[in-house]
Length: 159
Figure 1 (spheres, one colour):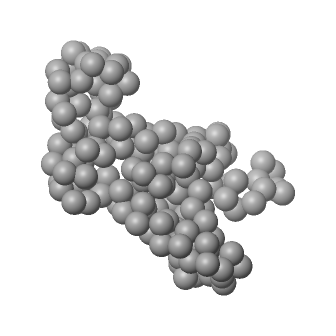
Figure 2 (tube, rainbow, N blue to C red):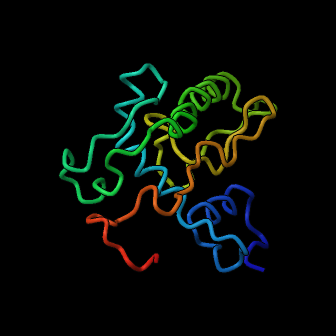
Figure 3 (tube, rainbow, N blue to C red):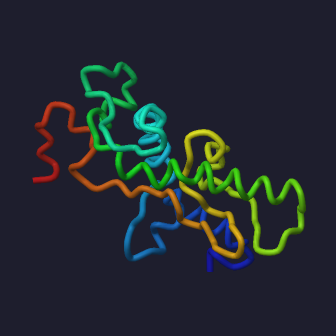
């Protein structure tokens, strides 16, 4: 099997980046990248609201980055859980910096391989806080029709 010999973090990374979709009955896609993309348009909203991400991303016509345009105007509230990973991971880091072998603590690992957990948050493939696994926290799943590259509103491929 594809999963033999892999650590649970590595297995989670593969699952959350869509690399195991052919083995899954429910296709996840690259939720790690989607989460990061949402962060790129919602992070400022979270900062402005003191960590509460209620509000919307800038509208499509206000964005010039092609990768961000498809997310223009989306509701940023779901990103709150991703943004909260920053505080949780910082707390874990504090414990591990004082005691690297602290029982029940494991450093955060973003599924996309970045260190966004320390700034805007990310989809976590690993991390443990006082025995509580954070694997899968902060991950956002793209729902068809909510945010898609249907720029003109004329995508007939979904009809």
